[in-house]
Length: 359
Image (tube, rainbow, N blue to C red; front, side, top):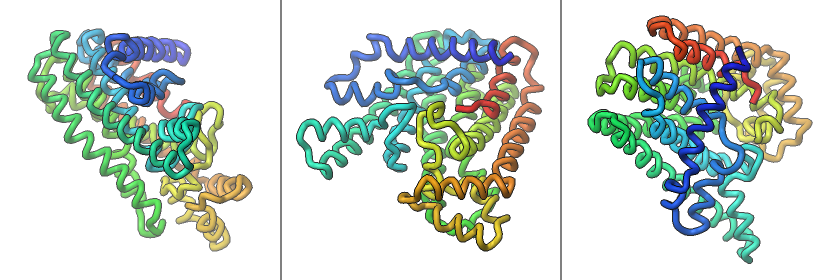
């Protein structure tokens, strides 16, 4: 089953990236730095394509033609990409997908052009912010191409409005909370508050991906349609489980597989549910170690390793893994309302993949 799903996932990824990388799309972007920054994460090691894939699966599960939904799948991948570019600036990460982040890549290019270190860093961040802005606009343009594929223009306008209001506001609220929580006392937070932040930061876009696929498949503007509701609730809950698994991999994953530095969340002081669970169950000595290392960007690998040991000893990683599985179980209750089909089977396999992956 894993091999079958990975083959189907790769097929959708190929479709989406062929669309995004086409000459017709590339010629929109003028100037080497504009083109290169916008395409850096697209031309390099591509993403897992989980959002566009579930959009296409949802379209098929609703009885639609996934080929018609391809512009939307490309749009959601580019929309997700701009959030990564800006997120990397906020977190000051230097690696993404095994290569340099946009701001780091263009900082290095500026150094080669003779910029001093401060101006080079400012240039890199500026290019990354602008690249993300361009990508957000590009995602709207891609979504508008649905009208050329036979989707009711009224449906297209509804989807654009939802993406640029509901989804953007949820994502930015989640990202804001993530930044604020990293400086808040851990004891001031709660599990529900952290889960809400995770849903806004990650689950909302997955929910919208499923909703959009179903609405395109049914060619309807009715967000309250039973099938649209069931699919979107399913994908949203799976999206939260995805983020919980991502937080686990950020602690115990393989740097080579992940394409980013494992342990960076600890140095950045991220208030993940793993950290919250550990802190609320730690003794005084363990709390002292956690407090000393969390948010300490100069922490050594050994100090980060000690924190990871504490997270493991207190059962925090296991706790969050079980919670992710519980979210998947809750999601499956919604998918039971969807008629049997090969696409429904793919949605179920996608759900399992969200929490079983190791990258």
